Every structure is written in structure tokens, then in C-alpha cells.
Length: 384
Image (cartoon, rainbow, N blue to C red; front, side, top):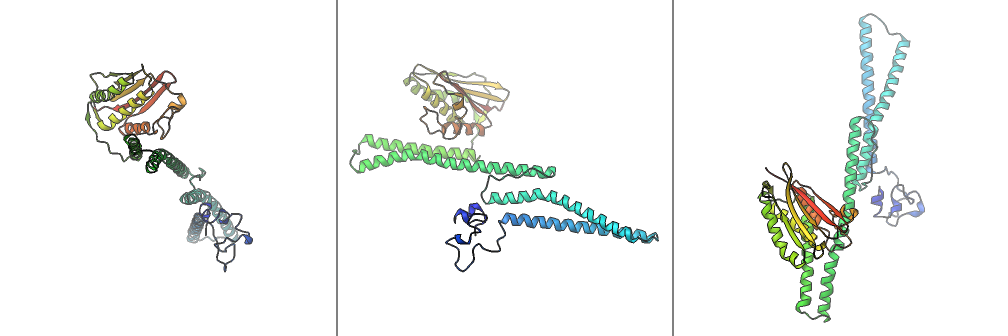
């Protein structure tokens, strides 16, 4: 029997407890046994409501027993003292004592109820989260510790809700990105099989390039998922950052020359030693240089600089004289699958670069101005 809207979706939303079909006997669901009446009897609500009711009942019973024990003990002590002193307790005093005990019991019960109500809210909310309702929040009331617990629960539920939204968005983005190379491969293969295109070098090369694009996309997704989960292994070792940057410039030198772009390197000789993953850091620099070349027109300039900006910190900057970006776009370039109007990449390079830098204890940021170029800088911790 569906007890919540989430469970009711499997049978039809109107058939869950409280839905419009619950009390209408003419709306018997088709899957309900013919020999049983509708609506069903004996239903006691969702599990978390039953748990909350049992919890409050236990608290009430405990408070009542506590009151009886306290009052009974006080009465017994009073009577023993009175008897030892040779005094007697008059009937009016006994009645007054009973009235006072009743008042204390009522006040104590109200106090216990006020203290137990926030716990009951948490029990109900936890049950709703278990059922998949991540939008539930509990009011922050009660004692300071209870308010702290409610605040922590709300933050947890908020993160679960955000994770669920990001997971759905990621699945949609991944399916969208995979669709393009798969469509190209499928279309070309169908054309080759139907005889529309000859199986020559040109068309086979297009298939190979699409498969490589698909392979890079899968590799990038795996790297990003491992980095975001904190499971990407970094092989830290003493690294000469200056030499790593020289090798990066050398690797992109021929491409920059063919594009008519000047590529500069400015590295001081006194850079401190770095305990970093040289391969992953080289991947970050390569991504930044590749993006800069893609957005810098012929006759432009790209500068790669490294400097010691603070004790224990080295900063690397890639500055270009390209098209630049608006502040709104610059603030989102490190989001997964985000691409600007003139971007042709997958939208994963900069998010991966961010995770690789952060994973090594650094930070990365971007500054850009439309028509005047972009500067992306990242920091790395130095060992000396």
C-alpha cells in the first residue's frame, strides 16, 4: 500500500494516503483486491509518523513515571519526618499536597512535550528524507543543542537536494555531450554501408577523429568524477616548476607560430621547490595554453609567468590578448559543461584544471574583459 506521494507514483498519485482517491469508494484502484473494501482500514500513516507517535508516547510515559516517583518519594520522606517528629499530616494538607503534585505533573508534562516536539520533527523529517523528499526542513526550536541538531539536519538535507539536482543535470549534460560524436560515427557508418560515401581515407579519418573525441570525453569525465570525489591519486614529487613551464612552452611553440601568435615565458631563477604532481600540473598548464591559443587572433600575444607571490606560495599566470569574456561568463567557466558563445570544447577542461589545482592545495581564478583578453592564474604551495 503506498504510504507517501513518492510511493504513490508507482500506482497513481491519487491513491496515496490523503490523495483524492483515498476516501472515494468509487475510485477503487484497478490493482486493489476485489474481496477487500476501499479505502483500506487500519492504515496508520507513514512509518515516520508512527515512529514519532511512539517516541512521544514513550517520552510521556517516562515523564509520568518520573513525576510519580518524585512526588511519591517526596511524600514518603515528608510522612517519615512528620512521624519521627510525632506530628500528623491533616487532611487539608494532604489534599493541598495532591493538588501541588498534579500542578507539578502538568507543568513537567508540558515541559517534556516542548522538549520532545523538536525531536519528533526530526524523526518525521528523517523519514521523509529516507523516502526521497530532500526538500524537507525542520524548524530550529527547542534547546540550544536541539537547535544545533536541527540546523545540521537542514544543511544535510540541503546538500542532498543539491547533489540530487547536480546528478540529474550531470546525466543530462553527459548524454548531450555523448550524443554528438555518436551521431557522427553512426551517420558516417550508415553512409559507408549504404554506398553514399566510399570507404576512403577521408571518411575513415573522420570516423577515427570522432572516436577519439568520444574517448577523450570519457577520459575527462572519469578524471573529473574521481577528482570531485577526492579519489584521484596524485603522485607528488620534488618538481622544478621552471623546467616544467619551459617544456610546456616548447610543446606549444610550433602551434603558436603557425597561428601567428607570440608565446612568451617569464620565469625567475629563484623559484622555490615544489612538491607537486608534475604530470597533472603540466595538464593544467597545457589546458590553459590551449584555451588561450584558441581565443587569441593572429598577431596576438600569450604570456606564461611564474612568481613567488607570498611565503610558501607560487603563482602561475597565463595571459592572452584574445577576445576576452564578460564578467558573467568569466564567473562560470569552471562549471562542468559550461561553454561560452564562441567555445568549441566539451566544457570539461577548466573544471578538471580547477580540481587538479585544488587537489594539490592551490587555488585558481580568472579575470577577463571583453575585447582585451583573459588572465587565468593558479597557485601552488611551495615546500621551502
